[in-house]
Image (cartoon, rainbow, N blue to C red; front, side, top):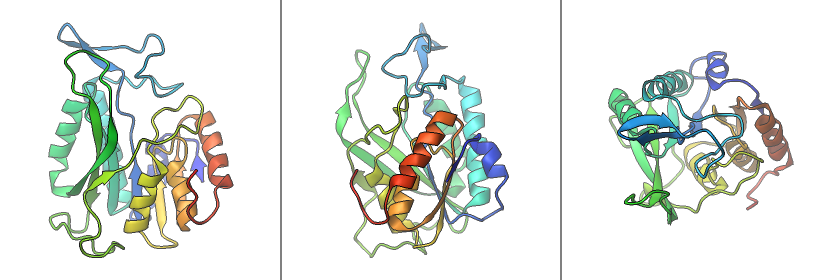
Length: 244
């Protein structure tokens, strides 16, 4: 189930260590750009970088850092294992690198999501973007790379995942990770009946993967229309794998 509320409000209502795994992807601050050497917002009209209908995605860098800092802290209070999918962009790089530094003693592993085909750069002299990363935070023993409760066998799972981009399922929501990505995380790092949370539930992909794999799911989504459509998508999903 996805609740229509801010993720920070939703997480604060949850008991400490009540969730087995958190899988989420925060907004990337894609509409904060640099012009004449200074940060500025490009959120004036709908652009290629616009991923949400009712969210400007253009916080100043300090506010973006503070927001993600609060979210990560709450995630680690609620769950010992957190998968945090991000992409390094003009509008977030300093904040993300600063967050990695602050939580260096909680980062257990980094997964590179290779999207196979590079996204063409919008601007001149900019590298095409082909990958994102999943920062894995852990409370229990982040110094070790061993996942004590993982479901994969030795030598069978790499930290580079080649998975194509996700489909769009909810109108106006363009920031979607693929069902294959959510499925892979949940299948390999949780057990049947475990509780999974997605604080930025969006179009409900994490919830659908949980339905396929018979995990319990709770999510939060600040946009009412996204939450309604995502809940319907999860309701329509069946247990067992079904490539939508």
